Length: 130
Image (tube, rainbow, N blue to C red; front, side, top):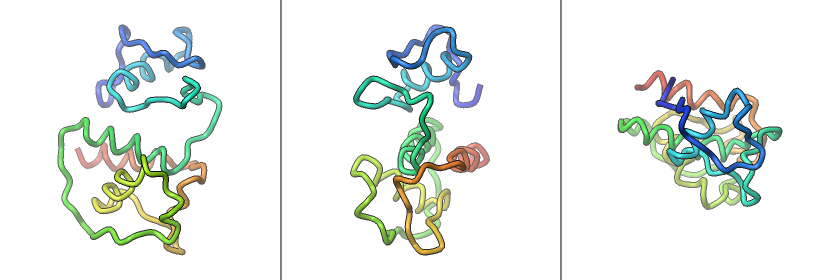
């Protein structure tokens, strides 16, 4: 599996991910590798969306797991809604933007709290990069 994320022996402690779920070995492996951490209630968020900022944190962790380094393609200045990006996500957003993996909106914002229907796009770009 991509990024070695299929491990039948891995386990996670998410209260909403069960060993009978088809995605259990993938989520568990991602948990053990530190790619996903869940929320403060111990949930993975199976039935919730993912915000753009959370998707960038996960994408950044996956990128680091590959052991590759990207070429900085542009300087990071800031997004118009920079203050809305959570502290835990700022480095990931800056890194992926500088590498040319993500962009902001046409208005120059990032919209970090927006639930993204296209959150796999950064992962696809990372897969192509490696």
